[in-house]
Amino acid sequence: MTRRRPLPAVPVADDAELFRSAVGPVRPLPAAADARRDTRPAPPPLPLHSEADERAVIDELLAADEALSGAASGEVLTHLQPGHPPKLLRMLRRGQFRVDAELYLHGLRVHEARRLLAEFLATCRRDRRRCVRIIHGKGRGPEGSLLKASTDALLRQRAEVIGFTSARPEDGGTGAVMVLLAKSG
Image 1 (cartoon, rainbow, N blue to C red):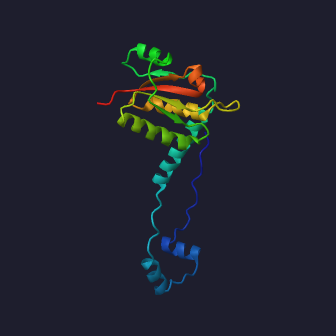
Image 2: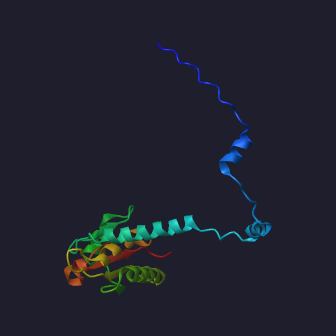
């Protein structure tokens, strides 16, 4: 093991003196510049979190629309809310309920169709209509019907919808859906 030799002692100058020699000559700012800096209003705060939330909502909505585009146009829609007898869905599929109202969505944009469908269901519930037909169309091209997929998603979320199924061929087939609404109290 080799021994290190101690370093030669360096004369230590005053820290303030070392700083002044490193920085060099300085001159103070004029008093007016300090006063101007103090009186300027602070910039308004940026709503970064609110903007991030809004972007997240938009991204989520766009992702939902992209997910809907995978729906096949010939796919049969069917859904029954839990707690209801499967017999109701069979009766609806066979056309054993009288259609009390009809909504034609074919050709509309998805956001327009969603708004109209929500208003239509509220009106039907108010007017005590029990069975309704919604015509969404089959769509064109390989992406299928966005309206069909959007209708399916919206109907599954509505509390007043007991169940729904694609219509019989003579009532529109897979381009329409028959909806059974709960009895209004």
